[in-house]
Image (cartoon, rainbow, N blue to C red; front, top):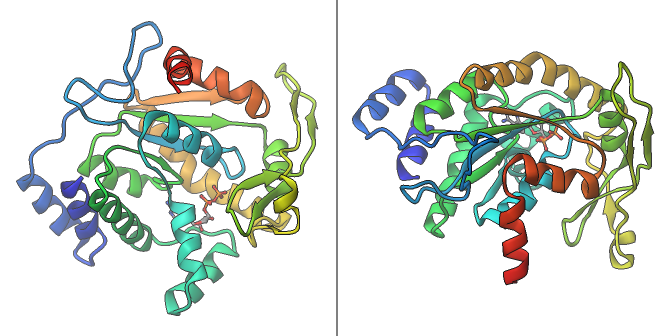
Length: 285
Ligand SMILES: Nc1ncnc2c1ncn2[C@@H]1O[C@H](COP(=O)(O)OP(=O)(O)O)[C@@H](O)[C@H]1O
């Protein structure tokens, strides 16, 4: 983890690649973990060298990366690190960076690689001081350049690409609500979308807040229809190539969400060979 933080740090400096490659060539190569193959038993939470999982969640805005990554991080005992959350924390602080970021986020554009890498390094450093190891990244990498930087400093074991039809994504973003007090995410959208081109229909029940959160619900400032459409456009242009980057490395696992959380969660666990592990964890709890 320390080498990763150092390398990410150096990559966000102005002499970006030079510093970065010199540092990496001096540090020892990270251990490798094969991605899970459905046909083979796989212990995903730690490899044979005792390294915790280093996974990435990809997917369009509103697909549910945060929800699934957060659940898996609890199950596997690794931190869920969402760069969108790091950006929002920065937005809520006052200062020149906050003003600059507010403008970018509210236009649906991406924050610069340098700023994102610096926020991520800080987050990893804080985690390391608390004894964290492994991670599930959500919202990073979002450009091929970010993926290359990450790949040069550490090994990613598996990349999960969550997918939903665009109409569902827009409805989900517009229905998203957050409790300003406890920080939990809810969704007021009731989704029933007919499947096209032979794909199944998709239904999702709303995920309603408990009574104590109802009066405290807020909507993200970038969850308006115009901004969501722009974020989707930016995703197709800048982030979709990241899918190909990992596909060519044999690390990409495509996952078409069959519906809402109750239907999708068990299917995702099954695809990750984690269904039995979750059963054992639940039984032990
Ligand atoms: N890796 C990243 N690179 C650049 N910008 C980012 C990154 N992660 C988050 N952001 C910024 O933060 C905003 C919110 O991120 P996130 O919560 O992940 O949104 P989404 O719901 O669109 O997936 C993004 O629209 C973008 O401006």
